[in-house]
Image (tube, rainbow, N blue to C red; front, side, top):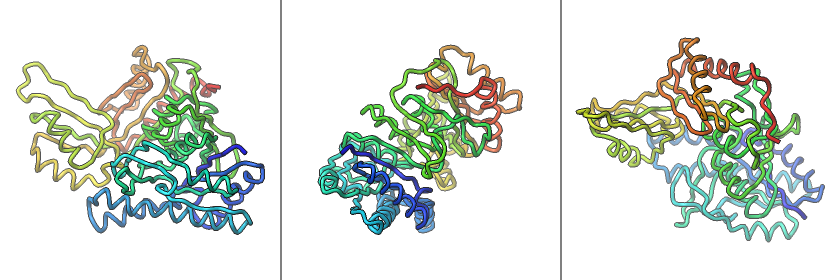
Length: 405
């Protein structure tokens, strides 16, 4: 029988009733003759609640202990789903990430999968069992519990699909990927198909439908990802190795709330980067420039996602203690990104984006570009407006995004 890996997000298993509905969907696939490996996230907001509890105990909790704590959420989901399936008369067994053979590097809270040894899963599949796996977690080569960062259950599913030679379906509360967040832009358009690079850029810059590391893993192993809605309604988005349908065209927008910009002058980039490394804070963008004959030397600015710097206040104090007046933290910014292959072949798209923002009186605090992306840092209070105006200019006035299929 062919193997199917399904992943269900936190909203899909948010309570007992929804877990039962997922169990029925899994059993229906089993009745169709598929071997099933099901990856689950923590129920609802469990991870957020655990993080909040940790920070009430310690304002900057050690990352190792956070992994020990937050990995519990997925274990609850996997056990409950296994019970629900067994109640329906089908044999099921649950495994943690480490029991599933997911080996990671030794970085806590945002570990990378370096190997999957799925022997126990294969044995149980041969016995006819439905295998339930806790997403978001693995075990380092030092036998430490590690977690894979926000959305890491997607990566678990794709990695297992690659190791088992399986198909991969990702289920959530939306029927695929849209040209913008429908909660912000009511006119957002469904995208039937996307290539790996566009999807990875969308995921890295705020689109929550898929995890960026999962897309990268899928690209390396050439695994197609089918993004679907848990209740079976609506359509789907297929993410796979597509050639861009229209190079230079914007296919979608992503946004992030409350990004942080950490900048310093005088002591240069090395001191700032060392300061961030001491605290295990990765950056998204780094800007460095030496003005000719400038007495203050090399300055540096790093953009950091909020998930890696949730509580800005203690970090600001530590920054001032280390650098004094030579460094600052801006925590009042949002980021909006235009995504499309070849988007910066000329400056046409960038000029248009700046014009749209200028018409609204929105002055970007920073700009970053790549071959697939234009990102503007804007005042956080005006982020939704910026997303809506840019979507109107680049998507709605052009028409629906083209299907890359």
